[in-house]
Image (cartoon, rainbow, N blue to C red; front, side, top):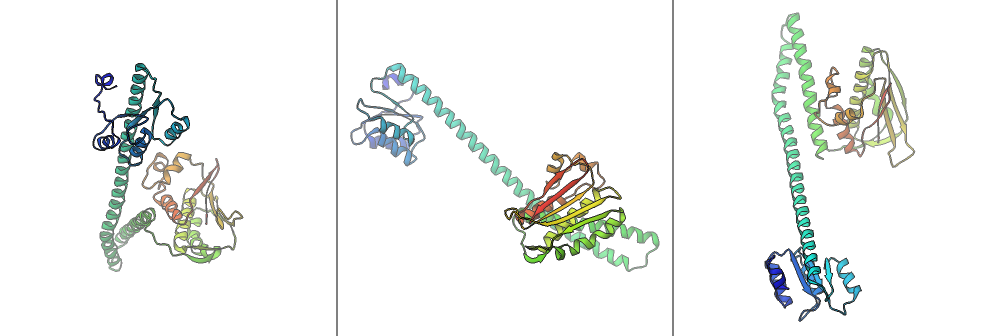
Length: 351
């Protein structure tokens, strides 16, 4: 056999199972061929040792004896100890054909393993980039807070000084801008904390009317400006949540509903008990009469810091609000759900 194969391959031979195992341990082989019976053990047992001790991932071919039991061979194949076997009356052409077939199989296996390794490395690199992005965002936001605090303090000093009407107007503009910037920084930090599992939850028992009291009070002036009305239907269900976080979510969703709803329209806020306890105790639904939002746009607006044509064509866009809501709900084991029609958009979630 060695003479047959030496023209095309580098061949090592041995008649000792111990020597064979030592060779395999110290040398990389693409293909291993063994007789059914060696001096002290069987070929199957040698292959079993090779596989179970991870000595080699080589393709393993067994040449059987005339009295070899098929059940033993089938068991060896099923356990992966051997890939192919030949009967003792094999022809040269049959052996060569099987060897070339086995080597192609081995090369394909190595290629797949290499691709898996490359994909694993690429995934690790993406994770590192995502981690670096998160750290960068946290650093930038923290670095912005210090100068912003100084600006806010100086605005306070300016407001108590003697200003003419025009100066007072400009100071008010600056104050409004810093309030927006402060809110964005706080939201960014909250979003990153929620996404990275670093946002602490302070859950307390409350009921729906008490939970909605503060968000509903904030709504009145906004509704009045656009001459909008509120369709409010709520239950008196008790729930166990982080009250501050859920109120923040409701503030964002109601703000968006008003902002993107047309003037003289109706905003819907329904909170109902849920019979299916797998979903939660209550369902919150917020709807407005705005036009339909395309599905791909919904997918994008749930991602942080994404600009798209839809939001660019609207005066204020969606900002970080919906991404933040999604992240905060995720901490509560929930998520936003959208129901779209040509005349309205409904956002809902379960708690």
